[in-house]
Structure formats: structure tokens, C-alpha cells
Length: 97
Image (cartoon, rainbow, N blue to C red):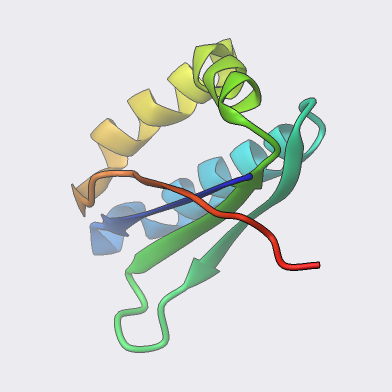
């Protein structure tokens, strides 16, 4: 399993549009094969920052997600609407039984 995290910080005037794009991306991603969990959260300390937490079954599923047209459209929206973003972190984990 892989855990994926990242964040984007909106400009005050683009927050609503960025949140709308993020929620649409999350909803679409949840239906993709291999997506175990996908969510976006507003940072309590910086309400302009959106934090993403994802769990994927394997690298093949994540690579397919990154190749989706919708994922590319979302990243284009992030570049247009955000003030800053962090690099995506991909962490392999072994679930405990």
C-alpha cells in the first residue's frame, strides 16, 4: 500500500474555486481502481491551506491515477489557483494485521 500526501495554499480570492476543484478531484479519484482512501482537509492553523491524504493499493494504481485526464486537469487548476504547493510525498507502508 502507498500513502500519498501533499498540500496547496490558495490565494484569498481563489480559495472557493480551489476547494471546489479539490472536492471534485477527490470524488472522482475515490472511484478509481486501487483507490483505498482519498480526502482533502482544511488546515486548522492556515485556513487557506488544503491538505490531501490518499491511500492506494499499489504503484500501478497510483500511476494510473496520475495518468488520468482529470488528475492532469486538477494539477492545471492548482497551478492557476494556488499561491504555493508542497511536493507530493509517496510513502510505502505495510499494513499491520
